[in-house]
Length: 336
Image (cartoon, rainbow, N blue to C red; front, side, top):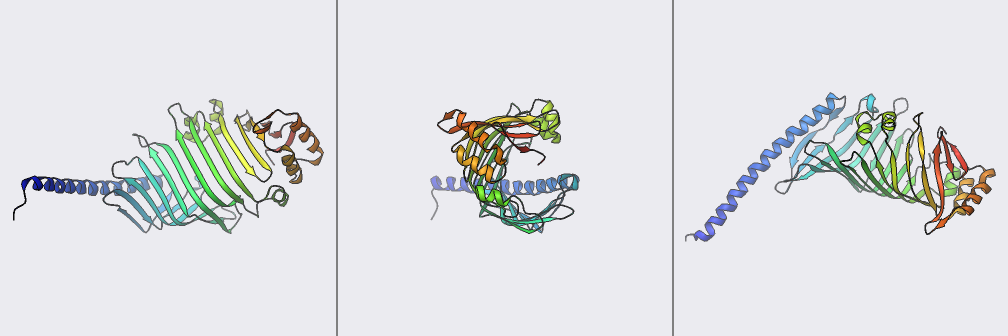
């Protein structure tokens, strides 16, 4: 029984396409393996030490997945001297777009830093994804991250400020006008008990419901080249806050503003805050000893006289000459 020609040619066409695509996939697989080796060699030439048990590329036919088993990264002292290890690190890309990769962390990450008294953290999450997009020159122009149910356990040393985050979303993009746009939103953040002062815990609680920030960094190239904040400031660099919000106990705040560095390389700027309940916030600031008791009435009076809007009372938060101010009340110094 012969196959009609009207069926034979489509079948042969599909088979030829499958063979050609398989050849392309295998060629791309070898290219990716080579590029991974080049990337590791480049990092090691910069002082990093990267070790892994195995590297393999899978995902045929729809995508490419680079899987590193038991990777360990040792940073040079010039970059902090930290060490990180994890069970599996995966990187995913669609077969038609190698400019966009999604990193997936599988299993806990063990992070060690500090030379005199090393701190060892075990960081685990139900979901841990990082998205990286690059341009034609291989420069990263967009980054995103999504984490859920993050737990941070201190195995030794000094605990960090946070021990748990329910959800964390982060995105960043470099625009053609040399600005970096960042957006961060975290929900249900739990502070480490060993780090949070008891009076602050009593006044605000150990967990915050929401922290959000939408900001733009101007003159980004100057800051990114050498991470020289002073040179960035001299070039006219600014940190522009388009939106910020904090919901932490009695602190329900939102605001916009801008910051830079002064001649002594200290932060200098102003944030226009909208406070939902200024009386509750003033009481919490005094209870937590962030504001001396003798300044409580001045803070309440400033809140009473400040303009009110749909988002609450408007008060300026300022950093100037090393001092931190809320309205007319000095909260303290940056050195402290």
